Image (cartoon, rainbow, N blue to C red):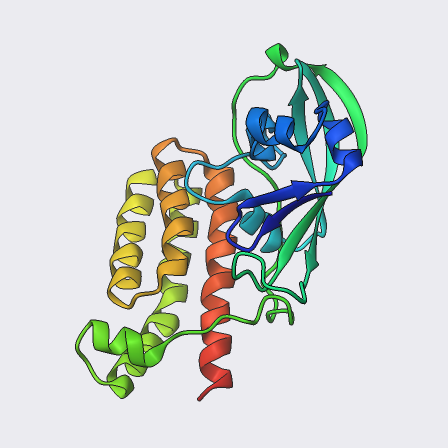
Length: 245
């Protein structure tokens, strides 16, 4: 396994992983690789290192527990199953309440990395009620309301309005994807980013930036994938509001 904290900082790796990545020790790994996503090959249908969104968060918000990546090691490219395990430490590590243990299994050599061209995306599904591991979002109502100089009740009203209106914006984006209207997608995303910023919903900004980035490059499949992640995050906000109402 390779280990990261909840802030996606590299913590270490076991002996099997060091051998898999052809590293003589952990210092060799840290100096020459650092983040395993640096070895991911960007190709349609696989996880890769997104520009504006963390790949670990992407996997965690995906429905399937095992995903595939293409990993390039010394010029050899292999298709590998990747699984992220949540580990809950009894001692404090970087103030992280959870440690991510990342497994690599079933490596199958594909071909050398020169044959791959950069394209887009990855796969993921579903927007059901949050699971117990996903429903731990908290919103500091008092802090957020004070930062925009309104009272708590008014902030809650704005939050409820935003969650209620969100489906309308999502449907506009989905229709714009069908029509290949990427300019309109960028327009709607700019509205959502403005609202999220004003309400201090900072967890939404990276995924909205990712949608915006892919709209600029007309990567419709990536837009769909990140839109589902965005919907899940808003669903978590709704779940939190309902739970604490």
